[in-house]
Length: 497
Image (cartoon, rainbow, N blue to C red; front, top):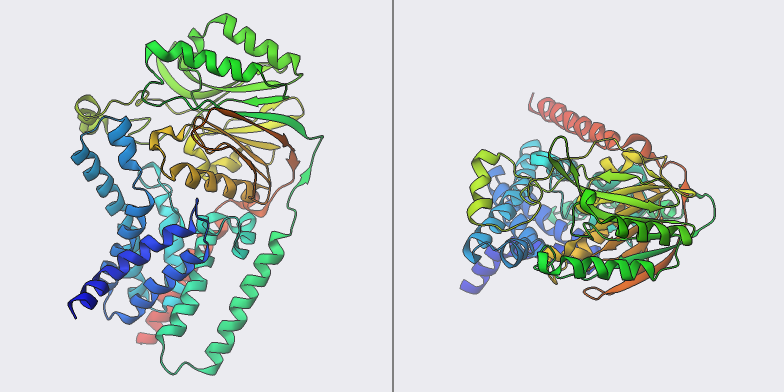
């Protein structure tokens, strides 16, 4: 009896942990639907909004503790934070994110009609996580369906948050079926028809070509230097790092060569002229260009930027990262939290400045390349700001901060979603992985092994055209969700009269 009591207590946590299997590197997309069926079923069976909040919070803790445990690695192993404080900080982040799932359960019970309220509120909670306190939308539900699920076909239309609503709606239909005794034949028939239509339409949409090839494909080399994070910024090893990347870059004959985020550990304006000449001349010999991650210093303002520079046949262009990582690249509320960096952390480049919100794609040969740096590709509404002008997406990252966890694979899944949303190929060059080329349907065409020094040679095709998501962004999703909630409120008030 005691065993079953403990199992009942642990069940919401286990449901949340099980959902992690739907995300990369596992890609078992039904796991997310099944776990949501479980939590929505529990919400339906509980008799109060307070209990629904508790169940949702427990589900969220299971999801995020298992799904983003690697934050601890960044803080402790590479940031130098004491193990107990790193563990506490990681748990606090997971608990904060779990609050959103708890609130979905609470307000779903308050609104009633969970078959609609739970999916809409889940989608809204994912969206709010994308901008509150600068945003951290990791493990947004919609990503769990990319790229293999039939529901991924909706991504170019509704984006990842709309896909969260669709995924949760499917789970809610099944949960309501399981939780309702003496279910009417009409509900069963309508439920089956609805599920079939959602699946069939999703599969049909996956076959739609939202963009068309433009120009000839080009040869591209994505370079993965596998530089140890704990020594990358050491003055003793900086020159070896620079030499490694120069050697790897100049060995390529590709028209487009891409190096990772902050590949060369030196300020761009202080980079030796012989190095820039070497990179530029080699790219010109290939009749192409090279994209290199560097730290940029504005000498007038004293501001530092996490940037990407191009060298080669085209005039040198740059892109400065706009969406910075809180506590990783800038210190929010510095007067309050500055002591953490002074006394507990040892992170380089932790006080950077933001680049412009609207930057134009790099014109490199016959391609207009929309560059994004590191976790900027988690924000689809920001990526589309360079579209439809851009013909190709390039992400440069360094996920070495998270060790040999599955953070890098989860990060790549976000890039897969951006390729789907935009109808563009995505090229990823990273320090330790996941270096990859992704097609316009979100499938990985080529993928370098992790944690090895290597180059990935691929064919990159530019595309033109505009998807509904590129045209409208998240606005249709936002209008639909708030409209649905207003209708639910009206329905509830009418019922109570």
